[in-house]
Structure formats: structure tokens, C-alpha cells
Amino acid sequence: MDGAAAFVPETTDLGELKAAATGCRGCHLHENATQTVFGRGDSHARLVFVGEQPGDVEDRQGLPFVGPAGRLLRRAVDDVGIDPSQLYITNAVKHFKFVQRGPRRIHQNPDRVEIVACRPWLVAEFALLEPVGVVALGATAAQALMGPSFRVTKQRGQIMPWPASAAEPDAYPPGDGKTFVMATLHPSAILRADNQDIAYAGFVDDLKVAATALTQRS
Image (cartoon, rainbow, N blue to C red; front, top):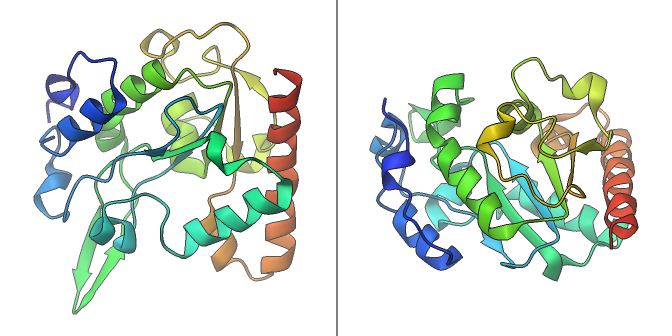
């Protein structure tokens, strides 16, 4: 598995980056997925949300966070008062990993090799976006950014400097020293929670922390 680096073009245009990603063959996940699901949003976004990977709905539509988890995320963004026009949403892995069970495609967590193989796309996105803040949604995204030892359950809602806390700091654009990163739950985890109201309230509280940090860095 050689990784995506050979497919990432030298460009300053986010549209060209997205177009190039459609032909990525950097890992085996492209073989069964319908299509590459690249990030979407404002090219001058101040806040970037990073999820794990596209789900079944996203894989079919070619857009990140358009299924149930995406609807919950949009609701939380509205409740917190974050301007959606200043957001960019993407995933650590750009292809849907699943197992087929009858007519259903069952989500499978990407492994470390697949995450590392896809990292060049995420690095390229950050290089062009230069956001003020990065929010990792769920354990896979958090570990993709901050290393396999990171635990969302223990470190969620904490503002940390970017990229000093990244898994491989030298691999990520250094920014201007004001960029922060924070981890929280993935919206899909809230949908699976025994008490969704409590889980959602905690998720909103985390996003309020990110919103405050965003304002402080304006």
C-alpha cells in the first residue's frame, strides 16, 4: 500500500485538489467504494471539522456528512451559533470501508495503515485552507491527527496548539501559531448513545469551547 502521496498534485486550488482525489488509488479501499468523498465548504474556512470516513449515504452521494450524522452536526452548529459559511468538513479517510451483508453495507473502522495512506490528502487540504481551528470528530479522526495514544474519552473538549499536538507535526502545515485543535465525539456516536439527550448536550458543550477559542483568535 503505497499511499496517496503520488496522486496529490502541486496546486493552490482546492477544486483541483478535489478533482485529483477522484482518481486516487493509494490504498485498496477505492476498489469497493462507489467514489472518493472529498471535503466540502469554504476555501477560506476558519474552522475545519474532520470525521473518520464517509458512510453509506456519503459514499453514494459523494459528499461528506450528508447522512444522519451530518444532520446532527448541522443542528449542533446552529445551536452553538457557529457560522456555517465559515466551515469546511472533511474526513481522515476519503473512501467508505465496509463489509457487505446481504443488501446492507456495514461500516468498518479504517485501520492505521489506511489512515496513514490517506493522510496526504488531509495534509494538502490543511495547507490550502490554513484554518484557525480544527475539530476532530471521534476517535479515528483524533488519532489520525494526534497519534494512536490519544483518547477522546479523556481529552475531549480540550483546546490544544496545532500542529504541536499532531501525530506527525512535521507532516502538517505549521500555520501562524494561533491555530488550535480540539477533539470531541463523532455525531454517529451520539445517535447510538443510550441517552442521546445527554450525549448531545455534551457534544454541544464541546463545540461551544471551540467556538469560544475561534472568537478569541479573531
